[in-house]
Image (cartoon, rainbow, N blue to C red):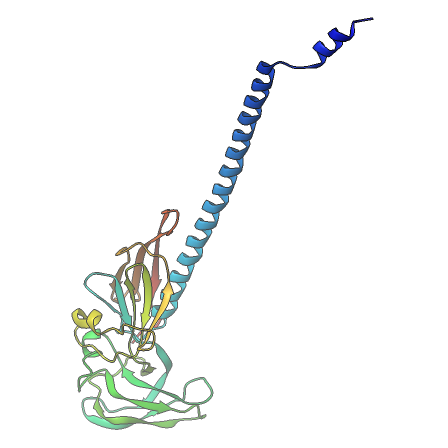
Length: 271
C-alpha cells in the first residue's frame, strides 16, 4: 500500500499543467469564436445579396411596366442617361372616321374594351417625341384631354378643343394617354415623378421635376450606386419595336457589395 503522502502528490497537478490547460482552452475558445463569427458574417453577406437581388427585381419590374406599355413615340431619355420620360397609355381603340390636315373637334371611334369612361390626351400616329411634348398644332397629340366612354357600338369622341392631326394611322389606331411621367436616379435613390406638365426640351427636364412627395415624387428603389443608372432608347424601325436598355449598379450601404444589373425592354405599342 502507498503512503498517504504519495497519494496526495499523484492526485494533484502542477502550475505548468494549469497554465497549459488555460492556454488550450483559450485556443479552443478563439477558434470557436472565429467559426461563429464567420458563420454570422456569411449570413449577413447572404442577407445583403438577397436584399440587392430583391431591389434589382423591383427596379427592372417598375421600369419595364412603365415603358413597355407607354405611348408610341413618347419615350425619351436625358443626355446623361439617368432619366427616362414616357406617357402611360390609359386606353386604345380604332377610329372609323377622322379628317386629317384640318382642325376637328370630334372623331367617330369604336369604344375601348373596358367598363366606365377614361379621360386622357388623344394621340393619332405618334411617331416622335418632338411633336408630342411640344403639344403643337398640327400635332399627333391633343393639348387638352378628352373623355372616352365604354359604350357599345360606334360612338363619337369629342376633343377638349379643336385640333389638327397631321396624318392618318395606317391601322386607324388612336390612344388616350396620361400626363408625362419620368423615372430618374438622384443620388442613391430611384424616383418616379408626376404632375410636372409638358417639357418641350428634354435638356430642361431635370430642372422641372418635383422635389418632394407632396409635389409628385415617389421612391421606387434604394440603394443604387451614385450616378450608375444608364438608360438608352432605340426608336422603332420597320423591322422591330422600340427598345429601352437599362443598366445600373446596386451597392449595399453596410457591406459595400455591388451588383451590376442590365435589362432590355421592348415597347409593345406601335403607332
